[in-house]
Structure formats: structure tokens, C-alpha cells
Image (cartoon, rainbow, N blue to C red; front, side, top):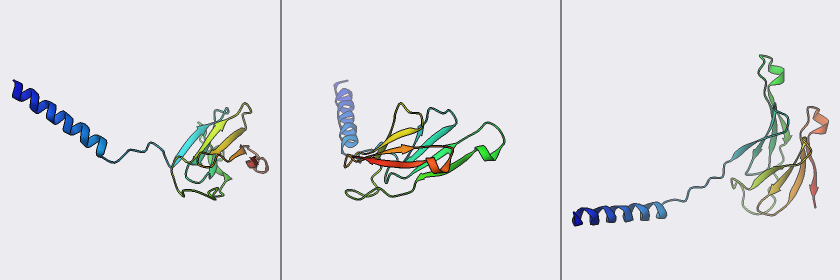
Length: 128
């Protein structure tokens, strides 16, 4: 029984060592979808470069209510690592149409607004 216990302990220690030496898993995703306070509208963010799209869905069969449209297709990376998943995050505000976009590498941030009207959507301004 002692030999079996020693074998089990050795096997467990080996598995622990392998799992800690293996490649680190990164939970950051290339894309995230953020809900708005409008139940039909979401914002999709490319977490590597800050590009965003407004997405709307419907339960009806009317395709005109189901779409994705650009909020910002500007690559905001001006310094630091390129294409690093999880670099950009969106944070809701009390205003249902506005989010704060944060560059977690540099700390830069922007006011982002979604809208059903094209001229009212996009990055409003950098917050300095």
C-alpha cells in the first residue's frame, strides 16, 4: 500500500509540474460583444486594435432590423504591442448610447456613441 501511495503522490506531483510549466493560457479574446441598455443592440469590439461595430438583432424575419455597422474602423494602436488580445475594453456609462473605450496598455480613453442614425455614431472624442 505504501508503494501505491508513493506512486500516486509522484504521479500527482508530475502532473502539477507539467501543468505549471506548460504554456500559459490567455483568457483574452480577440473580439468581445458588449450589451447596450437597448435590448436589441450590442457593440462588438476588436480588443486588439479598438475597432468597433454596432450590431442589432431582431426576432422578426425582417432583415432590415438585423445588421452590423461600423462605429469605428480606425486602428487605435499608436504605441506598444500590436494585435495583443484584451488590450482594449469598453465600459458602460449611465447614458444608454455612450461607452468609454479604454486602452489598457497606455491608459488612453475615448467616448464612444452608438445610434440608429449614422451621423450620431462613432468615437465622439478622446478623453484627455
